[in-house]
Each structure stands twice: as structure tokens, then as C-alpha cells.
Image (cartoon, rainbow, N blue to C red; front, side):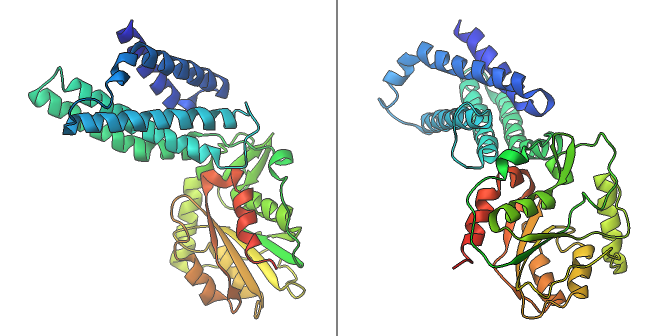
Length: 351
């Protein structure tokens, strides 16, 4: 019975890791069954916990105990964050998706180590070393591979009617300027709306990552939005857009803009842009060069896939005489739940 349950739990765990390739309902069902199975596993092995703190502790026992505790904490975090994401309870405004992904990574590493420790009882020599190397590779794969899968294979869907609600700030008239792929690209009807491609969906409407951030900022500040649009059309394929951007940097090209905002009546400008090749996109640079922003204050918000601010803040200082305020960086997968982060950041600059 125990061996059958353990095998079933292992299969369910790996089924759960494939969440990007299955429906949310199937993923939720697998998660619930897994949680029930983990509880049953611990009930069947309750005798082990009676001696959990008894006896001598050698290195292997310490590591085994640590992995059990880490796995238990991971499963609890998975259950709570999963229930919050599935809206089984009224959850506080937190980045539950990042918590869920972090818990998956921690649980996966703990599980691999736990299995390896128990395997050491039955296999020795070269087979054990081969198993150790395999477990190490799988653990590294979990650390780097799971965020990659989440970034490039998880379809991002939002409900603006829900996520735009929240606390507001009383601020002076403010201009919100953003540059996004949406509005500068002709996307086909069926396009992969994943965070890595800077896209998400509200129903059938495509939303750019920077566009979503701009709408969050507007919902917080009530500011006026301006979209940077180029005369040229960027490719729908993300990889091709990356290459076009590289050519712009290599050639020093400043893509022509369709129009410019009237910035005279604004003292504060929130500038939202993606990190391209670790710096400002060339259309954003052209905006900065084309507008007289002397004595104005710019609040940069950078969306990225892991590069943080890159060199973009230094570039901002080179291309404008405006005062650059403390910037905010938002990881692309975290954007749907970023309103609270944006509110707390902007709150620091209001009286």
C-alpha cells in the first residue's frame, strides 16, 4: 500500500509540474489529489515522526530531516497559493503566482534530495553516484527550467475589471508614458500571449505588459496616458523583434514616432518601458530626445525578463535633463498582480 501510494504521489507531482500544458481544472484536481495523498502518506508513516527528534543525528539524518521540513513547507505554500489562485477563498493582495512557483521549486529540490537519501539504502557505488548526478541535474533544471516554462508556455489571462480596483492616491496632474509591443505590432488573431513575449489577454483583447502597467498606474493616480507609437511596425514574432531591436542599436537608428505628447502642463512623468538589450528601447530614447523635459521629474518603471533595470537608468540620465526619481522594476510574470507594488512605490512620492 505504502509503495503504491508513494509511486502515485511521485507521478502526481510530475503531472503538476506540467501545468503549462494542461487546463487549470486538471491541474487543480491533480493538486487536490496530491495534497490528500501527502496527508495519507504521513498518516501511514506516523510512526516515523514519533522518533523524529530521538536518537543520534548524523549528517545524512540531518539532511533528510531538513528536506522533509522543506518539502512540508513547500506543500503548505503550494496548497495556500494554489487555493488563492483558484479563488477558493478571499485572498489578500499578494503575488500568489510567484509564491506558487517558488514553492514548486523548493518542493522539487527537497523531493529529489529525499529520494536520493532513501535510494542510498539500496544502491551503492557507481549506481549511487550516477543517481546523485542525475538528482543534481534535475534540481538545477527545476531552479532554472520551471521559471523558463512559466515564462514561455504559461498563457497569461487577466480580468481588468477585477485587477484594476484598489487604493488610489491623491496626486497632482501626471502624465503616464509607455512603450509596448501592442500598438506597434500587427499581431495575428491567434498569438501566444505569454509573459516572455510581453503579451497577455483580457478575453480576446491583447494587452502589452507595459500597457497593463500603465493602466495600473492610471488606476492608482488618475493620470493621463500617452502611448509611444512608431511609424515602423515591429514583427509579431518575438525573436524577430529582438533582432530588429539589435539592428537599431547597432545602427544607432531612432525609429520615427507618430506623434508626441504635450508635456508642458505636466511636472511629473511616469515612464514605462521594457528592457531591450539591457537598456532603453530606441523608440523610448527618441521620445526623450524629442521632448523638452527640463526640470520635470521622471518616475521610471521597467518591465523585464530577468535583467532588472539593466543600463537603462544611466541611459535615461544621458538622454534627458529631467530629474530621474527612484525607479521600479517589475518581472514580466509578476505584472498581473503588480498593482499593489505600484501603489506602494508611488505612495512614497506623494505628500
